[in-house]
Image 1: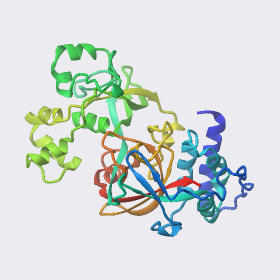
Image 2: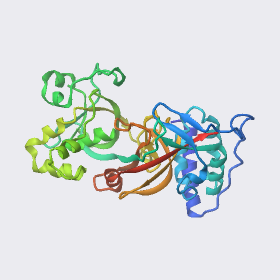
Image 3: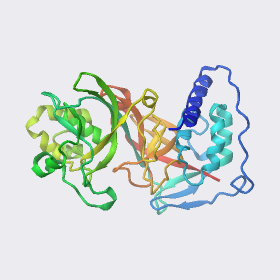
Image 4: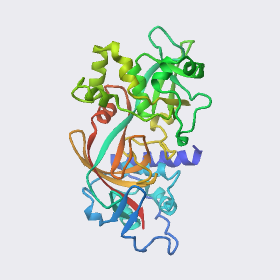
Length: 383
């Protein structure tokens, strides 16, 4: 990240904190006006058709909870997305940057003037409730070399791994654990070793994580393991596998862990039910980088509670989205940014909310584990 971009991000964070605290701030200059004919005053199309969704123009008053969200809390995510703006958002992003320390009323008025809300429906126009789930960035303890207790490897991609877009499959999870030729292909590719195979599975499902690695000399290196590829096999839920057998009553990670403790002789059988294996790359985790989430599919760091994973054939990366959901885990209407995707995130009204980072007992994990509830979405698109 360039120094100028870091300064803008820091300024946005500081400005938001000052605004929350009620401290006096110097208001930014008026945002630049768009060139004639760019989008100011141009009528927005009533309907936009995407590969897997249909957008129907609505009035701002149709957005539940509009005007009640703390927009400044989402502005950092908006600016991060503007580092790699979606096509058509270049002018919008240029105007958004100086508004980072504007008042909530000014931010809201600007959005209403520059953006058009569209209700996201199925491609055929049906508007059923969608599904909201959650994901997070786990924090784990690991060793650089295998030990008596840490014997579960996390691998970098092997040489010759087929590209995901090729449709070809490499060895399955079970084959990696059992076939000598698969193990030979991964020899020397282990980045770190964990104690718990379920921790490794969770890390692979989440796609990235923060790992405190104990080096051979006793030093501890804090790194981020980021998604670097997978073996081409389809993802299968081990929770679904256990539910189908009647082994558990609720497909939560707490239930899965409890079953594993009670049935150690069947642990591999459960793990092998998911043939997909994910490979990682190691990234340095500076003090500055630790303040943000991992980079999503858009290529920008994720913001807790404000970044979502979407189906890019339904909503392009970088798009502001108004999200509304009610359920046991979360009741909210808020501004979020489409900045990531995932293998299970397919369809029009489908999103995965990034909840943050932490251990198994921390709130980001608890919220991500509980989230599975109805969803409505509106994209906010330049006029």
